Structures are given as structure tokens and as C-alpha cells.
Image 1 (tube, rainbow, N blue to C red):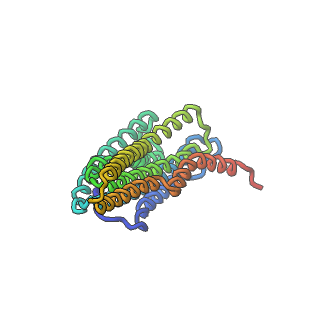
Image 2 (image 1 turned 90 degrees about the horizontal axis):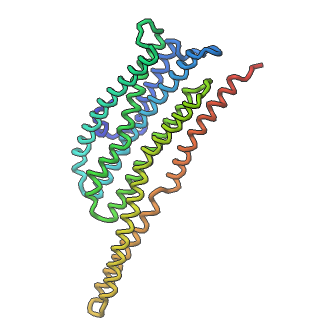
Length: 327
């Protein structure tokens, strides 16, 4: 993993190579140690190991892939905003600051991953040296799983906050400021959609297992909290956009009214020119609002939200297929 992921642009074809290879490597390792051998009916421990091996490997690769996409989107949005403010030369400075913050997040995520894994092992009495090899490998695989979970949660909102605080204030032109807010809204929405995609993989943990009521409650609470954590910044940006747009339109309308009130024959040409410019600005401001969340964004959001119940349905359907007698 690069410690400065914003340093070089990634090609679309190469973004998913390393996450895919790691996922396949983890699955092969689990298969070799026996965790992916089809569990016997009623063997709760074997079923748990089987589910955990698939789920953790898949989510680890997915989150790493999502991080790479996130970094590329952040770099693209940052370049776009810097071009609008004629400050493209500061891109190197901004990416170095983001890289420093990324390194801090790596350290914090690694510490939390080791801590959570240790606590889980202590709680499940897995610290004994007499554990099976597949259990040891599963425990070791939990470290990168939790690492990418925490790292993604740290990164998914911090980059947007950085751009809002460090880059957005430099967009002095009203149209550029509104366009910048639209870009940030789309960036935040894309990040949120990718994040919720990981939730769709969680049902794998409960394949062929009874789901206790407490698990349903905790998972529902976690999903709601994560959605609020991810979509709340997007909602605030949308509100900020609407408020800023109203202020800009009020200012333009006031200027138009003043220009009309000061109209006289001596300044007819100048007033006509000023009115035309103000009208063009007002039309441009009104036109920006149509690009906040378009049909494509709404479709992706609907697909993201529907993927969660769909994934549970697919898991239950697969359980039914597996349980059906073969003739």
C-alpha cells in the first residue's frame, strides 16, 4: 500500500489488481488450512470458520479496492477545484498534507486492528498455542480485515473535510463556489455508496446459521449509524449549497433591481450591458441546481440501498438451494 496514494494517478484497469490478488491469496490460504472445506451438517464451529473465511477475505479486498477508488476520486476532485481557483500549483502541497494524514490513519487503524483482534481472541479463549492451524490463520486474517475497516472509516470523510476547509474557501467566484459544492456532494455521495456496499457482504457471516435477535438489533443499529455517519456530511453540503444559492440569487436580484432603478437615457448602453451580465449570472446560478443529484446518482443510490436486503435474500436463497435434497 502506498503511503502517498495521491502521488500518481491510477489507471482504471490496475485499481483492483492488488485487492483482488490479496482476496484470492487469503481464500487459497483458508482453503489450504481447511477453513473452506464444506462444513458438515450441524458443525457450528466449522460453519463459523467457513463463513468468516469467505466474508473477511471478500470485505478486506472490497475495502482496499474502495480506498483506491476513493483516493483517485479525491485527487480528481482536488485537481478540478484547484483549476477553478487558478491554484493548480498547490496540488503537491495539498497531496503531501493528505499523505501525512493518511499515515496517521494507517497507524491508528493498525493499532485498533491489533487491539480488537487481541480482545476477541481473549474473549473467545483463542490465545492458546494448541489451536488448529485454520483457527490461527483466521485469527491472523482478522488483523487486515479490521485494519481496512478502520482505515476506510477514517479516510471516507476526512478527505472531504480537508477539501472543505482548505480548498473551498479559495473559490471566490460564486459560480465556481457552487460548482465546487456540487463536486464535493458527488464525492461524498460516491464514498457513501461504496461504503454501504461493504454492508451488503455482511450476511455471509450468517450463512446457514440462526440469527439471534440481539444480532439483528446490533447489525441494524450499526447499519443505521454507518449510514448516518456517511450521508450526514452529504446532507449538510446540500443544505449549504441551497443556502448559498439563495444568498447569491438574492444578491443578483438586488443588483438587477438597482440597475433598473438607476436606468436613464445617458447610461442606457451601460445599464443594458450590466443587466445582460447580471441576467446571465442568474441563469448560470439557477442552472447549477439541476446538477446536484441527477438521475444517475439517484439510480446508484437506489441500487446501493437495495443491495442490502437483496444480499440477505440471496444468502437465504442459497441456504434453501443447499438444503434441498438432490435426486
